[in-house]
Amino acid sequence: MKKSYNFSAGPAKLPADVLKQVQAELLNWQDTGASVMELSHRGKDFDACAIAATDDLRDILKVPENYKILFCQGGARAQFAAVPLNILGNKTDADYINSGYWSQCAAKEATKYCNVIEQNVVVKNDGITSIKPMSEWQLSDNSAYVHYCPNETIDGIEIFEQPNFGDKTVVADLSSCILSQPIDVSRYGIIYAGAQKNIGPSGITIVIVREDLIGYAQKVLPSVLDYKLLMDHDSMFNTPPTFAWYMSGLVFKWIKNLGGLSAMQQRNQAKAQLLYQFIDQSGFYRNTVAIPNRSIMNVTFLSPNEELDKKFVSEATQANIIGIKGHRIAGGMRASIYNAMDIDGVKYLIEFMKQFEKQNG
Ligand code: PMP
Image (cartoon, rainbow, N blue to C red; front, side):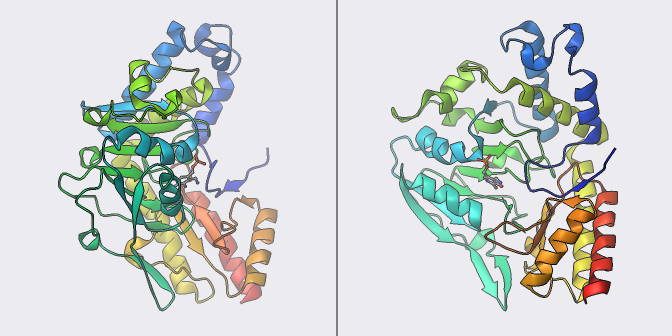
């Protein structure tokens, strides 16, 4: 069977063990004689599966009791609108931290619903990008919340500091770093993440929301995005993407079996370190993010010129390395090394990079 090394930013590589399990039980799930995707979301079998997934996620992320876990639809982008419409209440302003492409998109969408106070925290120095420390972020007194994106998937930028802004409600888009390392959920009002990187197949979005923020939705908020309705209906106000939910549950179990988020963090740091070290010593490739802000999930790199970038991507594909092309707005290359990518995959990529450098350097 053909094997690819998949560095796609999302939908991304899934754990092989999970895919094998899905394959084994695809036609006869839990001895029902049917596929999980053919069964009612209201039946007892799927209900048990949905609850187990929720409980396992609560367990691995250590989500406190006063937080609800919602399984939503519409991707992370739907949350760009859902957040202000759910929690603005009678306020009009919201702080938006701009650290790269996705946080900008969130701010842009929010301007439809509130007065966005946008703050750029990106610092560029001699071609190297870094992020201002949180202590220098200026938050306004009257804002309903502050929104930021700890891992900028396209830019390869990560903010490792944990938020600490007193009473200010913190909303974080964790789409590309959720479950990559332990976090203190109690520091956030809302965490949301599209599934297609570290959780499961696309189609489901996890929202973790502190209970006291629920129940203040604007009248115009579509019901399917209303946290209160979703909570009251156990995320089954309308038909959920059952297959994606089931598979996410298998991924949560896979993470648990490997030792949880501390184990994930160790694996992820080791992979990222290997790749960044190689890039830094090569003299041929370069990464343009300051060391404290280098993402451990999305490693961006450039060759000496655009022609060589193109050649790299094309020859990598022939070597069964897929999904390595940088995002069209960033150019260059990007290796997304989410939880499911193992260190051997990273070593394979580095070997290819060495060969390419030898032939083109
Ligand atoms: N936020 C971040 C950080 C992302 O990486 C992405 C997708 N790559 C999105 C938001 C948008 O997610 P979706 O396509 O699920 O709406």
